[in-house]
Image 1 (tube, rainbow, N blue to C red):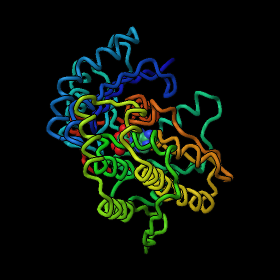
Image 2 (image 1 turned 60 degrees about the vertical axis):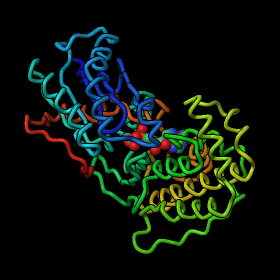
Image 3 (image 1 turned 45 degrees about the vertical axis):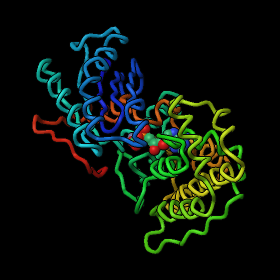
Image 4 (image 1 turned 180 degrees about the horizontal axis):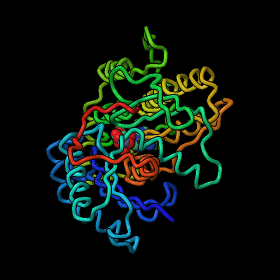
Length: 361
Ligand code: KG4
Ligand code: ZN
């Protein structure tokens, strides 16, 4: 018998719903992005995010069911992200999931968003017939988190390190905003980095004391700011902001016309430094834990420079990235993470609450 899970995800600025069978077959996956709403503010505005989720959640769930050709009665459980994330946004998904369960009598499953990002890769590995082998290492790098976990058989997680300040995606977003590239910054900087020299700007970043597997991006962010202040950037940045006003999604060629070599070198050097900061911790932890698989997931896992650099690593482990559609926020990953809970009948009660911070256990 197949087990079909309908999952809802609304932790940040994407309203998503998906139906996944047996934790591995994606029957439908719908993501409504709020980029158009938040883009002009240079970041996610929590109050606007909740309002957009309210507007989108019903049509998104309807579309997920409709494109799968399924009624709610053919679903075995409803899963929802309980945290971490923006409380007002999470609340929309949780309340609607509870309402669906109340009306249909289906069980409710609560999923940790970060665990969802990891399960995006576990799900795809199962699809290919080469499942993730344990112990595994998982790096989740997104706009909200930069976490490194060891995962033992049976999904026992041990947090090895996390960011002490900004998340990796947040660093991309802040640098892009400073330079006038709009929000989100990761995808634009990723496309422009190959046009610059990654050794063009030297960053001297203080070595961190304490836990060697923790990450830090604030030193790099300050170094970029210092570089910025030493240049005469006003008209260059104004030109790009002007472009964004007339066209919210410029093509690479349009950006290139407004971006001189010094800035392209800065972008390439910044990206290379972030990649090295991420990979050196993956490298050392993979050896220490004898990991057989390394999972790299979350929005930053879309980064082509990171994918290329990871491909050059000589580890004893297989490195796996999700396909780009499953790297950024989506609900298929939530359904995948919920499957094990369905098997173990780990259901949530009506008291399920939104949690801004929620550790992976
Ligand atoms: O996982 P995600 O969709 O949402 C969170 O859970 O935060 O990640 C979004 C983050 C943003 O900070 C965005 O700039 C970053 O992922 N991102 C990238 C790329 N695509 C998205 N960062 C670097 N390179 C990319 N290609
Ligand atoms: Zn995420």
